[in-house]
Length: 289
Image (tube, rainbow, N blue to C red; front, side):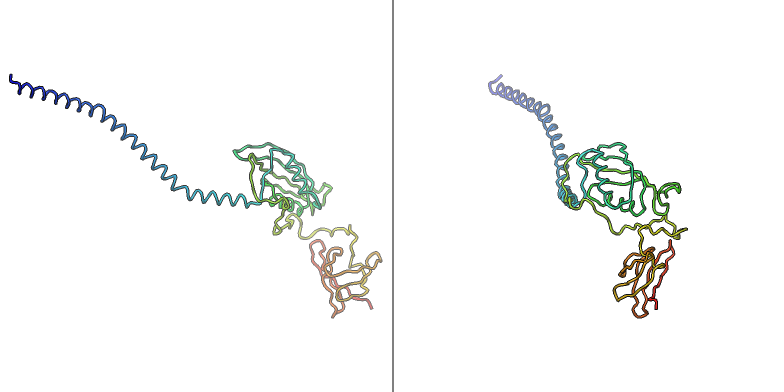
């Protein structure tokens, strides 16, 4: 065999070895690496898509967050500082202070904890005039601390009770009082701890439109039907009441069963607006000659 043929064979064998090694490297190493990189690329593309979606959602979410934050900071309500039923009882006692004719029993039921807040559940039962009960509810719902009222039941007081059946009612309600588990900043002012909505009606639907008998004159007001008119000016009325005492009245002043409505100087008479147990009546007094 010539030297040239031998070298050619050696070169071909060498090339075949290199080609086989290259094929094996590509087949068993690079293809596996390509498959791995393709999987990683797919995962990265999916991750990029998710992050792009999150990025696209960020501006409206930020806007909603800022809006919610402004609402919270501008809210005129706060929550109780701790899970303590005594705080609720003390708050109701503060609301009931003053001239409210309202008598009640407070019973703590249980408390329910949420993530950022909790609820103290309690029951309030008692007796009150209808108007004062509505004022009591009005204050609870509109004042600073966050309370919700449910399951309100109202009934006229029994005729055997010591209360006036035309003025008083018995009531019961479920009270949910919210307390905070984390500090919540608001703009609620301590000076506005108690508030009422002045537009709430206190008309008593349980009271008959016409009573069987008129209320007694327990405050010893002027009984104009038993009084004598002495004289008057454009702004004042002088009369002798049922007790023989001289009284001076101005328009709007209360009398028994009503008030002084007007002074008619032209006809030389004064007019009283009376409510006789639901029957409205204008009563006139003239100077006796």
